[in-house]
Length: 397
Ligand code: ADP
Ligand code: MG
Image (cartoon, rainbow, N blue to C red):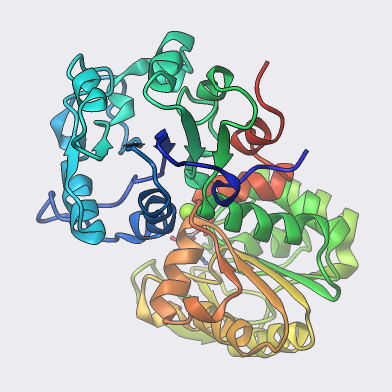
């Protein structure tokens, strides 16, 4: 069944309860200052649409951090309310809690129009997907809008359970949900060939399911980052002191036997004696004793670029090296440039650190889609869908 999205809804005179992912990071020094507003910014089109299309009340809700079911003002949504008010040019009233008795009068009065419920995870019922709590949240609105793609892999009260209390036609996805779902579905279900996937980052074990799913679909799988060493070790190469768990070597052997011919591994490296040490070029595939690989080398970059030439679909998850350090970011940034330069290709970047790396490269707007959901986009790539999306498609019984 097709998902109904917000632009197909009649919001005139309705109270709308809408779930977003406002789980933003804060500045380490000034802990009330949001350090990256991307997640809120990506929610604005849906909120503005509700404001411009006659909604009577707009009740926004989200979690923030992990307050573990207890009220803890370190995780207050107050800074989010202030930022939203500024961006919308509307007063945004933050409630004391998500189930506060004062909410009723806020809903009954003509003002305020925009209400933000305090952090949903102050209630352990949220993560427990408690039915009474879901029912309470549902009672605030005539219509439910799910735009929290970044939390759609969770079966929580506000991302999943709540749908039980709306009849079909009265719940829908927001614009961010639509964009994410369509982009990821394209890559998972109908990738135009040639299809190249680039996988890097830290651990094979965390991404084994994605690798297994990809290996049957892609034309080439390019492996970089710390992901590469278990594969190289599985082939009998020396990896020095690079990050390389024994269990990952076993998993890498499995993947190699499933799709060896499609797998591309680094042939040279940027190494160092320690994690923050001076960078050295290692032009051989074998890494000398006492050295660790921290980025892919120049020959590997060129080889990967030529694999990418002509690709029509590219999926990228996981940096090619320790991109946080300027000495080890060339592999990652070169791949970002190669993707940016591709003509007529569908390029999708997913994963928390990968998205940060593409942001740092300044090339994010050259990609077809940069997914906002770290864990959610990875789970989508593994499973082909998410619980929150299934609920929007089929409801909950
Ligand atoms: P994502 O969040 O995009 O899924 P991961 O969390 O799997 O990506 O991996 C990102 C992390 O992997 C980064 O912090 C990066 O520094 C680290 N990393 C990449 N290459 C290496 C390497 N060769 N050695 C150690 N860490 C690495
Ligand atoms: Mg990560």
